[in-house]
Length: 276
Image (tube, rainbow, N blue to C red; front, side, top):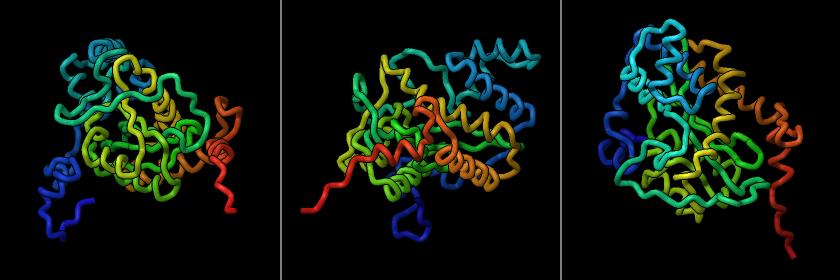
């Protein structure tokens, strides 16, 4: 997304994309081995107890002989981009200057492809580090339309995944996200508005919708990530890409009457108008 040879300065490009200039120059620093082990276990516990905050996670970890305090757990949760899932006014860390859009899905029957898309970001542990995964998902079919793996949790890799989804599958009527700063950024919302896509954001009382994408995170982590210890970022990208290919084309879903996401997606696409 950043063109170092462009006439616009890197600082200006970063501002337009809604990302920090520092992230452009970011070089990953090795994490202490103890913290990596702790973060891996915290990630597993978060999937099992999504409502657990820093205090509960601390207590769960202490019961497993991890010596850690609440403040350190809270610091690692922030670094990992996870937080307790429960009913509250703010479902994610949002930028105070960004516009938040109303929630549009309450009472809506979502039963066809490209009616609603959604996205989120999750933490992915590796053997000696970690990365972040963003996925663009078709709500009705559970099909992962596009994804990106990044070493930083900024807006740029989310926009790359979004643009790929547009190129390959058209566009949805509604796009739903949480109130994370990546999704409320002007760069992200303007990309949707320019295409006439209605923007929906989870808010107070809508916390259960996060569970929809959490199920996909659970699947990719237990069926792929936790079974392997990726040695590098390219290896993580390759493994996750291969998993989503299997997930879309071969993995049946009970919620789809045992169809695969691909089967449901293409079967429920609106019919093209017939030329007369």
